[in-house]
Length: 426
Ligand code: LLP
Image: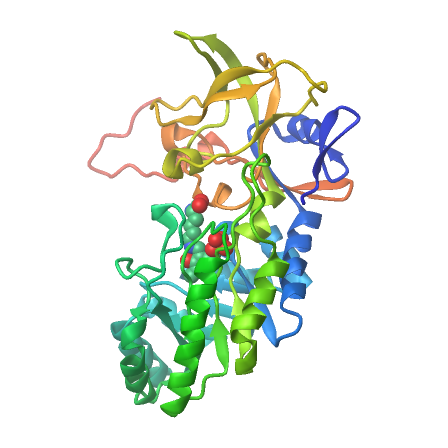
């Protein structure tokens, strides 16, 4: 459930009419709901209540400072994958001991920043990374807490671009080699092995692949303990999917997921960490856009919006479906007609939906893309020299711009002209 509902014939974000935000900040823009973010975080927190646990929000999904602060205040830790994310988390007030560092390509500099600043653990993904981490830790006179990310070779049954748990993927070390790698880690004095990490993919709509992976982790925990390792923490990654199409069957709930975790891993007495991103932020956000033109084409009508693929890349990149709803509530039983919903960018891939049934639309109408709070703003670019769009956070009847729209002057001034070029006179 989210907090974007029609009320008195118009779409609201919590208690704020979305049209009022559009009037204040202009379109396109992203808007997030505080109540939805917190509700989703709590759903996970409560689902794991029977176990010692920490929910580390995968901030790659949406890393705005105000979003991070909202979740940190609710008690969330963070899963970071770069120096930038680490610094953003710290800037939002997240203490180092609630931050886990994931990713296949941590640089020495990133390792140093996190070790010096404080970190809960590194999720190590390869032997060379282990060697690098050990070296930096020894140089700083520290011991780095680590888990090793294992690749369980299970099929997550999700889009190929976001599946990560098959042996052909670049992630983790093959689970069959885990004991050997743990033995190596135990010999490195700069490392303190505390657990196991696994993440098999994103937008999973079935618990079965998670369960397969977690059963393998349970077995590995027992083997490693028998080998003499002290395994006290299991990081289970993120990946639980959300309902992008409200007409489709809903994926499992965090409570179902929590019960499965308890069932498969509860007996081990480990502290559990999870790294959900999409399920916390996805349905907590809309992208709001305005119709520029309605254009009649050959056998089809195009709805040309002021938002484009550079603002929300998911349909172009993953053929993702986002529900697109008008800001004015359609009358019950209103006739619909099919539209190709597109942006102004100069490529055919700039298509949000083909032959989507919608009530008749006209220029200047506002529409909202649902489920756009995760992997929306964070994946946007300035392609076609379109300025990054603003982000707004709603809290009850209040709203605030949490990232303003940059000016074109700011955009242009980030470039510089080398001295061998003649300055222009204008
Ligand atoms: N942990 C790790 C190690 C990850 O790689 C990811 C996501 C997560 C947690 C969070 O997964 P989530 O709960 O959000 O599914 N841009 C794509 C999604 C990429 C996911 C990358 N890794 C999209 O828009 O669908």
